[in-house]
Length: 41
Image 1 (cartoon, rainbow, N blue to C red):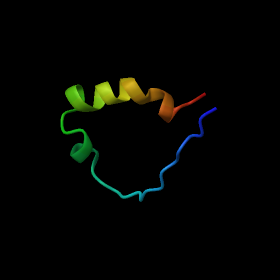
Image 2 (tube, rainbow, N blue to C red; image 1 turned 60 degrees about the vertical axis):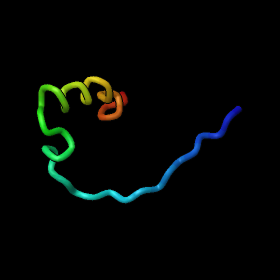
Image 3 (tube, one colour; image 1 turned 30 degrees about the vertical axis):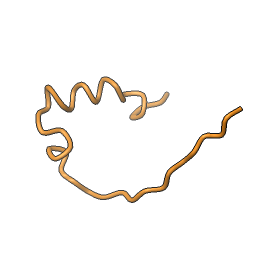
Image 4 (cartoon, rainbow, N blue to C red; image 1 turned 180 degrees about the vertical axis):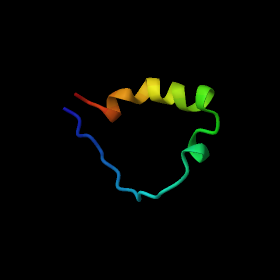
């Protein structure tokens, strides 16, 4: 059985536009791929 490695990092505020400059092409695909992270239940 493999152990999971966790990383510790810093959280910083930034504009969503910085991460996803174009909603349709950047944010929507990311949301589709990661929706379970936002609501795991």
